[in-house]
Image (tube, rainbow, N blue to C red):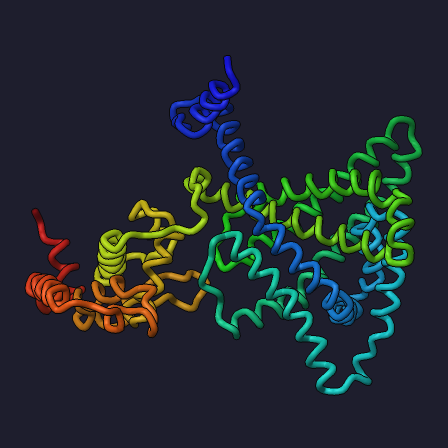
Length: 444
């Protein structure tokens, strides 16, 4: 069998087979293969690596201010002494350099005295912290193909929650795990023959689960998308495994190498630190990509990262979308989220977003500001004309500098287009969204 034949058979098995017709174990394996292939495709395209590089730069600027703010919060809860052990654990793959970097960071944090900072310095301190969280949100939103960001007030309130609550939960968990590990019962078991290994295994499992929990928390809270717990957990487990394996490889082949010291001299520690930061952010984004494809398996086979909708497809999706929203609003039934609309119309949520944006821009559709994020008509349904919906989706992505009015034309073409539009207006008339909803509910 030739290589091409093997490749064709593999592609046929992975992409053309129906998962519903496979046994449970085989279907799961094929689905995981699809997710891994799609994730590899995204990495090969280069966007995750570019975003990871951007996060490294922002982290270098924001790390000390972030730790300073977190340190002040943790001090109030009496768990501020856990900061140094956490940094040592995170930078453990760097070996001796990790200890040196941790000492420098803690020294910088200790030297940050908020009381003597002026107003501008204090604003800059919080700005660098907010900028890091914004970069993380943008990177994860891009991974989830989300173009619509949260409002400024909502983002700032959630960032403050992360800064205030996140460190307390993380360090409390670390402190609890450490206290259990050093408890009298644990020490007694460790001294017994054969139980020392068990304690070591359980402590490593607990450490791994803490990492998974922290990453799952990021995947659920940060993206402007309702991420399912199962998908976030799947991505977090994959990221935690990659982080552990990469840490071992990094400490074995990179941090312990003398070549970097010979080449970079005094800069070796900084270079190794930046490489590890880059790998850590890249792993976080790869895990987010796995979570995305786990939640949206229909996107694994898509070769195009940017969806493009034809004009007639936009028109149909726009009318169907407004009809579904109008029906749920008119009947006082449960209002629909983007995911529910996507499932109802059998359209990818990303494709749906391309039609939602112009409808929102024209005031025809609005999204609620609460946590449910449901869609409603932008105004009374008897005031939303079908002509307005049609015009909104047809004019999507037009700009002030490029639209039908400022493109060179010919009288015969203008006349033809005028006749076409007149025919459309003749069919639509003054029909409103309410008329369409009532017509759709009529029997037959």
